[in-house]
Length: 90
Image (cartoon, rainbow, N blue to C red; front, side, top):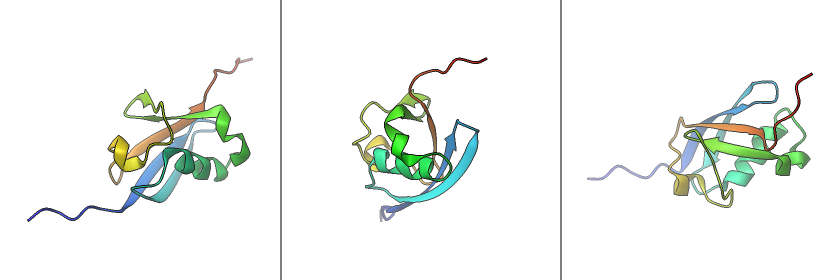
């Protein structure tokens, strides 16, 4: 007997602006872009989402229109949301 497919994932997301840790629940078929926007809304203006990228497994997610399940994100998985362009340090 195969294990049932888990449709709700518990995610750990680090938003690098301020090193915020965000815990979210998401559907396995939810798009990466939507998860990014929800993570940013937890502490940064979500309307600036286009200026941020998502990393999973150490690599930038190239197409945020993919679902979490398409990327193979498991429950308990970790994502990182960071600025798309480096910022100068003063």
